[in-house]
Amino acid sequence: MAAQSPVPRLSSRKCSEMTDGKLAVIGLGSIGSMALWQASRLSDSVVGFEAATPAHGRSAVGGDTRLFRMIYRGNPGYYPILERSRSLWAELEAETGQNILTRCGGLSIGTADGPYIRSILETTRLTGAEHQILNHEELAARYPQHNLRPHDIAIYDPNAGALRTDRAVTAAIAAAEANGATVRRNTRVDSVRETNDGVIVTSGDKSWTFDNAIIASGGWSNRLMPDHLKAATETKRIFLTWFVAKDASEFSPEKFPVFSRIYDDRSMYGAPAVDGVTVKATLDGRGRPTPNPDTVPRDLTPAEINETTETVTEFFPGLIPNIVRTDAFPDLFTKDTNPLLGWLSESRRVYCATGFSGGGFKNATGYGEIAAQEALGRRAFEGLNFVRPQRFTSLVTIDSTRQEK
Image (tube, rainbow, N blue to C red):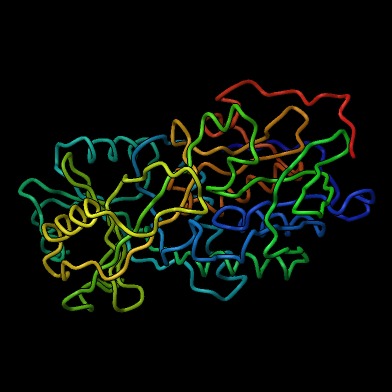
């Protein structure tokens, strides 16, 4: 994630006398809140728009926690963003006095010679991430909460933990406001339109003009993007489930790391009882299309309940196999499940930070920094072609005859 430094733009409002600000951030959820916080460190002319209130329970921020892990499978290009995100989570905690990342370690569990463990070890070899391999006997002795299959092993990540989602988002927005950012709550953005002179943001009968804008509306971003990206994205419903432990102390963060267990026939991830009562244990990879993010079905289907209960019964004898809490949220998925992070056109007016496909929160601070730096013209990051929107099509040139109305 190397960076170049073009001529920096000034951060004063004097640069934007003909506009309402230098930068608008549309959507203040997982990524938008972090982009606003980072942008507020660079400019005193930043405005955030949130359709409801920050960290409201109907967005992808809901669900109390998300996993933070340095060990993962897939593109090693994410690792520098993870490293930077880890540092920025600590900065946000120091700046706001909030405990956001519960550092409890993490386990990736699977069959010793299975594709899940093999892929994680391959990525870890490329990234050099700190880790420890636990054989079956070591895993059973250290973490007896897991009912293991005969050939299970684990890769332990000492830098993993559980991120407190609502606390993170509200802390980032509070920090941004303290830095001088303006937050427009309960202001649903209906359109974002580029002109020769800026970006017009419209909500109902009101409109504002900014030098640039970041679209970070999660499951609601699709309607604000050009047609070629609408075709490459889809809003999906993600559901979460919680259980009560027979002995909650055995599932405390001190004893029970965040985890991901993946096999051909079953998969589940989860987090310790950060509230001292309930353990998050949720089926992995079960997102399904939902045509309208405003009407995501919140209740689980009988099939979802049955599969979740069966999996918990096998994996965790220390959990009472009755779902005590469920919820569901919308998120925007791309065709290749990599995010959309970059400019939408050659005019470099509208930037998007969305399409994180259910896996963006751990890197939210890093993504927010990239978006803010690039949207404000401070830095351009290299080595990120796998997240750039133009991988789905070539950039579109804005019509030079378009006039601001």
